[in-house]
Length: 198
Image 1 (cartoon, helix red, strand yellow):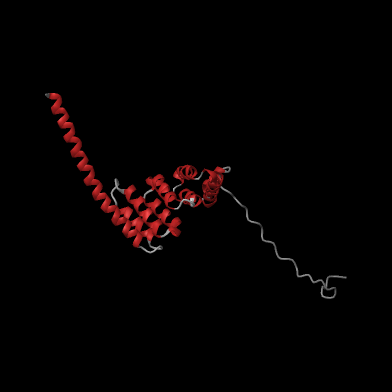
Image 2 (image 1 turned 180 degrees about the vertical axis):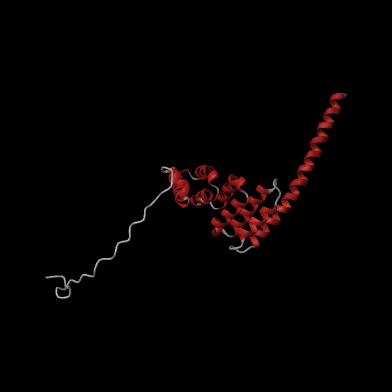
């Protein structure tokens, strides 16, 4: 008898938890649909700002799913705005980098180089995640993807001179100014024009 009641209790708990999960997912599905519609309805120029604003309003638990939905809807509506849309969404939800990279590569599979470049510029700490995801999708482009990653890192070093100088030897660069020299006297190539010439 006690074993039977334990089974009933466990089945009841399982059924109740299933209803709870379904109700939470239904609310989230409606919310995701609304986010997708808003981003898809926006103009290509406005889509990154709309997506970023919607992600900013999301709760911490829903941020990744809303970011993925916004990026997905934006890229399906405006695939040419990959760079600006991915950059905006990555800035709004940097902890969701891996999911966002996979979403971008699902929708625009030939844009591995662009995705790697954008992630390495916006979120340098997660650039290796983007490289791994892009390499897994297109192993034939592994060398090109690694080259793009190296170029991105080099651009970042040049753009931030203080850390780059420290990395290349440290310290500050001191340059002494040249003394000002009076300009030379005007010399003419014509013999008669130069009075000091014989």
